[in-house]
Image 1 (cartoon, helix red, strand yellow):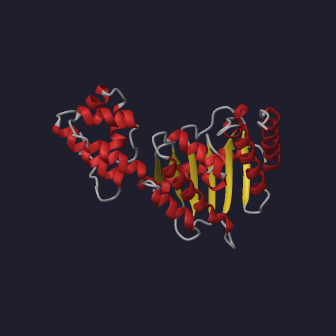
Image 2 (tube, helix red, strand yellow):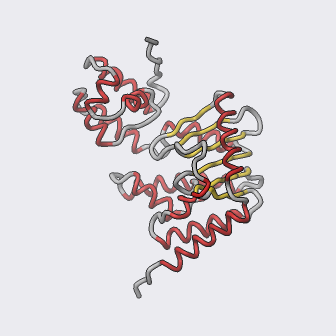
Image 3 (tube, helix red, strand yellow):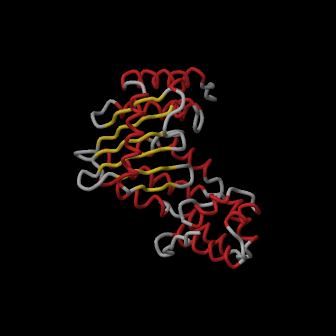
Length: 282
């Protein structure tokens, strides 16, 4: 059996959480599989928690704290992770993003943060962080909107986005918010540095169905990839892995509609939200 991967607790709050979780599990005489069975969740999730690559949902964290007799330590750590405006697992990505001259994105469920309106961003964050206060949500929204300054530079990076059709069909924040959001995407897609393609449902399966993908080209230095789910992300820097994700993105571009057809479909979805929107009270 290979030795467990060494962790640096000073690397990030999730890494510190992972080190603490592993120590408590070992002290309890449990394997990752054994602990996962007690929750119950897959033992691979326990491994991700211990590596600092994923933060457990609150209910899972509460069970871990009780099962491992952590006396509230895991609950306290979890709270610190959740209160951080930019999570540690995303901070290095944001640093790469700030230096990028080319960004290629596939978004499975939501409009990318760089193209989000304030109401849309707020609706997403409220549903994913239901225990946060209004002030905490506002801070997170402000942090997200500040990142959009990248697109207002004198020489902005190329942003090429492939949106799954689910992104434009699922109303986030209500129909009025969604209509405004799609109008914002259309407006930005008319600028020379933003390109938007749509991947229709009818195209079926594709190589990036597990989540969202971003490829960043810094101009100088190697490209990196970023794999993201709703509550965690992983920065990929190994050249052979980045190359595999780049190939997957090429296949997505081939499956997606051309930009002109994509914008026409987005405009149609926007108009549908407008037609179906209920009358505002007088």
